[in-house]
Length: 303
Image (cartoon, rainbow, N blue to C red; front, side, top):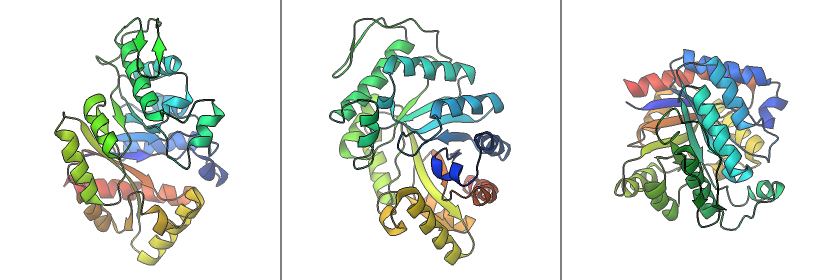
């Protein structure tokens, strides 16, 4: 059965609109109470965010069932050994509920974030693969790690993870190279292609290599009035990206409409086993009103 999760916004726009940090934790609790399967947070240094792993730790303390995830973590922004310890600690504290979706950054947007922490933008994908490889080495008790970019002659000793091998790690990317790397190196795939046909064909290529968890990142607004829905989606894209909706929708999956229309659009992404739903609004009132509508969409897709 397909699982559905809520992406909880932790960036400056929603904080500027009046949402408090404790209220973000309340949103995760509400998602669990509404029957959703997971809660997720993004990761950036570019929009004055709350720290993703700290927020997930707060989610872990207030929830008991939902998967906790990153959508997506930028591992290059953190020391690899320390982040291995942070993720392992979070997984143990949550009773093995952590899933870590990771990315190498988005060209044209992420370069300043890498500069903030003094990490070269070049070879960012090889660096990402190495960091994930180092995490797994540390989680299985290896005493050293040598990859293409990262080299550690010794590693500290960590507690045993909640699950053998540690938390699953998904790749959030959609390029021909990414499809190959998912099949070889990762446990899941989290893209947001605007064309369902691209999702289906990409998934077929990955599955020819090895089984993985196919996920989907979808930006949605459940609105019965199509004019209002389009206006709110336009407002969201301009606020969040500084670009009109037509431009953003050429890059990522976005949909607005009634619960039935949103569900019908999501059904087109055949093979998706875990759908992450991001509400297309930075207005706390709109966000709160949308939460039960997301649960309605999930119920339609499960039926």
